[in-house]
Length: 111
Image 1: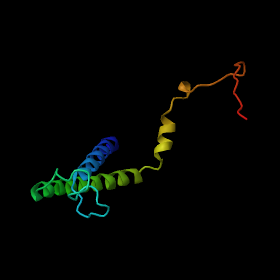
Image 2 (image 1 turned 180 degrees about the vertical axis):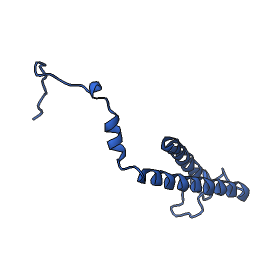
Image 3 (image 1 turned 60 degrees about the vertical axis):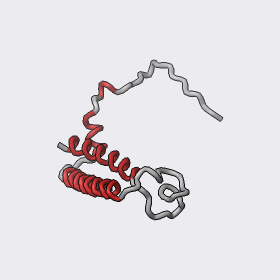
């Protein structure tokens, strides 16, 4: 269950970054992105209808991101082990590379 929520969480985070980057800058702090003479996507979103649609999508994705963050926190709080402990417990000891004393291993020493 937590892996499904984690995959959803990562997908929403990537899409949220993209939607935020598509929005028009209205602050004009450095003169990039939104002004008439500034660079960026100044002519991409002229109308307010398109911008308000992106704002609505951002609010919905932000809400989903918040809910999945809280869900992952609650699910993980019931586990007594950390994620690293669970991964190390799942490792198969036979798959680890071991060296015997007869192996001649040379390690270069940088001076």
